Image (cartoon, rainbow, N blue to C red; front, side, top):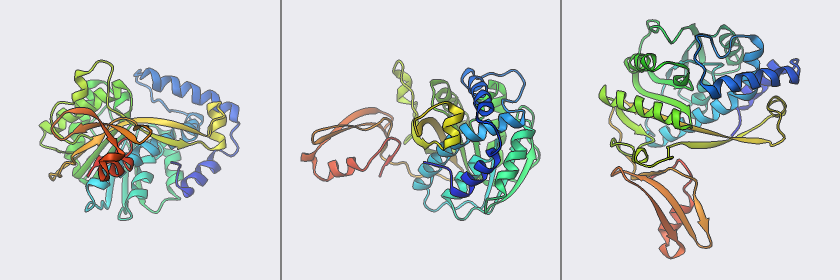
Length: 322
């Protein structure tokens, strides 16, 4: 997966005259803050150079994770066509670009971002978008500004920057601002998964209806297994400047993420979801599944299974069973 051409072109233009060595140093410092989940009261991105490093190294991955999660959501909600989006903790606007790529119906987006540097570059990039955008200043550690409910509300890679009480308060506010569907995306780490489980419990308690990725509302079966957690992955194409900033030669990277989608209306659950990479051998496939009854298991399909084997061959990590 890669950025849409208009966005990729806009990012390339923004980074054109910035020395690669400067981007690499800023990207490494930013990566250390993200990995450590530093919460020291400062924005992860507060300078122009840091915002550029984010655009070079993290925006493509954030876009890929958001686009994948929105794609899973749209498969289960083929009738859903949001016109207004509220994106909270927007960074440089990756989630809006992902939503626009997923739904041609999207017309307007309100974006809340606290970092002035991120907000300034987000506005610059969104000039190439077909969606009308309204960028607003917001410190997510405080109550959000007064807004009307939006069809779709997104929160991508934000909860890891907040303390638990602030997370809970923010999620409650986001649900109140959700007219139809709320999507939360977090890093695909054990800690990110735990934050998603906490959000899942809170939102179900508030009356939200679970859409994805879970095919049930029972306790996640992976919580009973040592060293296991639910997450998914998207392969992200690296541009030349991305490789230079990351100091790598490989033209791609795998972005691990976990997400949660809930809605006001009840949505029919699929029979299950593939929760690990497909394993295969000569004439057989093994799929690890989370099922609608709340269980997880690994099932084997061989050529002798006929149509079931052919159906299994079409499934990938993260896909729902129809």
